[in-house]
Image (spheres, rainbow, N blue to C red):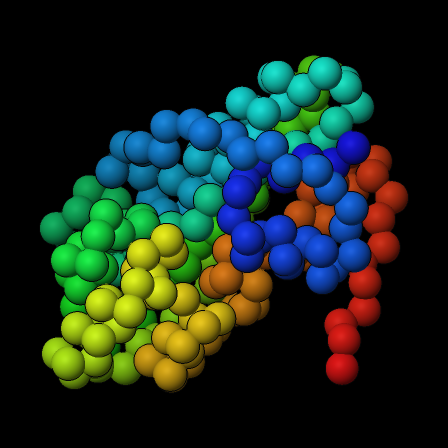
Length: 204
């Protein structure tokens, strides 16, 4: 069985749309990482942590567990990694802080993915970081968006797949990565474990 180690409705929907059958078993792990890690390394580390935790408790040794984590990162010379990483905001005040940091920026939205096999805890992992360019936001736009609550459960405090798409002027990379799961990469990692999968054709 394929298992998604996440409660994210966005990740579930992306996998369902791709035609994948899976169970859901959220990892519930510590998501803190060393701030010296580059965004891609940090996202992959968290994805591995989630996949590993769930694989270790699965009863069926044939289970393949998908872990994923998304980090939004703005270039920052003062940081040891060269980036300031933004997770999910704590509240509306924190969301406003993040939106101010992202306003007028070209920033990375990195989703790390890991697949772990329950039988032996072996893993495969990777990441595909797209870049997002956001126009400068007016203070009243930041205030209204933060107050709406739409971005409170999203890395970086905004959801490109919802109304925050109006803030974005350029996307370099795949949209599903920014939403929270690069599905092509998931299929590639599962295939490395011998899973024979056929991705559903896009609708429309």
